[in-house]
Amino acid sequence: MGVHLKASRCRLCGALHHPPRAICPRCGPGSRGSLEEVELPDRGRVVAYTVLHYPPEGYPSPMILAVAEVGGVRLIGRVVGDLEAVGEGCEVEVVEGEGAPYLFLLEG
Amino acid sequence: MREVAIVGVGMTPFGKHPDRSLIDLMLEASHTALMDAGALETPIEAVHVGCMASGMLCGLENTATLLADELGVKPQTAERVENSAASGGSALLSAYLAVASGLYDVVLIVGGEKMRHLPTPQATRAIAAMTHPEGERPHGVTMPSLAALLTRLYMRRYGLTRRQLALVAVKNHRNALSNPYAHLRRAITVEDVLSSRVVAEPLRLFDCSPISDGAAALLLAPLERALEFTDQPVVLRGVGQAVDRVMMTERDDPLTLHAVKEAAGRALERAGVSIDEIDVVELHDAFTILEIVESEDLGLFEKGRGGEAVEEGLTAIDGERPINPSGGLKARGHPLGATGVAQAVEITWQLRGEAGGRQVREAERGLSCNVSGFAANAVVIVYERGW
Ligand SMILES: [Zn+2]
Image (cartoon, rainbow over all chains, first blue to last red; front, side):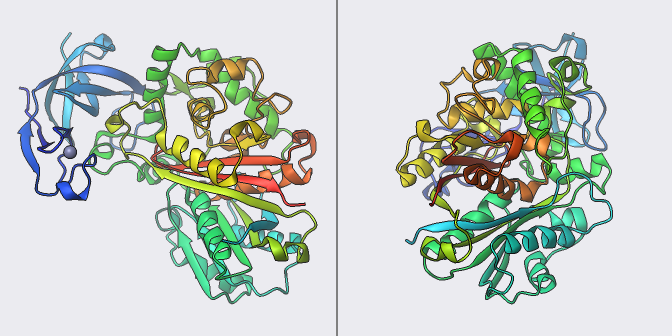
């Protein structure tokens, strides 16, 4: 089940941010109050990934961390599912995760 | 602004110091710097400590005042500066400002960290505290994983090879062989790097700087008083600092470290010199990829050329652009808060001609680059012989 993450969009410059922000870093302190909440799509595409063999305590080893482009925002997150299939350019579904704000699910 | 000079330096060996406290390490580095400057009887007006995480790592705060107390000095100012892995560089910068402004004359800077007593997962967690608290850390992001992602992107765009990356570690280990203060004093080969265990693909253990204990110290004075302490003062000719977005994913182009580029531009401009006039560079190679990317963003090589430069030997001690003659973070070691100060110590030795087997020939001008977070903040300093 895909989730639609809440992001913020700056009404002054159009920039999207995740995690959502109160102030747009492009526009500066004057943009406070000019950001609106938007939902991101539940699908994205892997830009780069790494297989982490020494993750922090409490995380599976090995684990895959990826940067994915989701509706115009680059997000970093853990990849779950068919790990063999991971590659740059492959499509992932943004899903709810245990102990993480979201996960990237890879369907084989 | 007055001209400011380094008039004394000291450091502990970097590595494992299981039986010594953080303050003890800082004390040794400080005392050595005071002796080097012949300043054991000189009133010290300020003590600036660079230390990232004494609380998390050692359960200790109030480090600067405690150090002053233990060292037997009674400065007007004693404070700690935290700028994650650039805490040392930032402590040097704030001390520089105090002397340049005329507020104080004689100021001690000490960078130090003690990390080895913790099991690696705990030390890794303390280091990962510099990542973004919402956007990165809850996902298990560590510094090596960010370096690995940067490496992937860089390899794809510029065709950097795994071998070129390994050569950074090989060079820095070779340099450290003649550095008695280095943590890892052991020659390694490309094959050693490529057969070391995978940390975060494509990075292996030998692509990463070690977890180290250690401290380094500097004594600053106005140039007009420097000859009271030394006949070889090293002038801080230009300083520059810059910040970038904390999260690599939020940067327009993550393959350019804008903090490094802008800080270097500012430091060189204030020094009134170009990067081509710099004889020796100490930069922040927490991971092999960072030496390559930073060398480009400092202006030493064109973007995308850093890997070839290493392969061609340009960055070796006897190359055209010597980088990290000390062994860098990779082989000298990386006690977080100590690193920026140790870079200044190394440049001082290089300019004085005291670097022994790792001496860069006729080094008259040097530059250091210390970064914090994942290069979200950088401190660059240009040094010049003051004699
Ligand atoms: Zn904006």
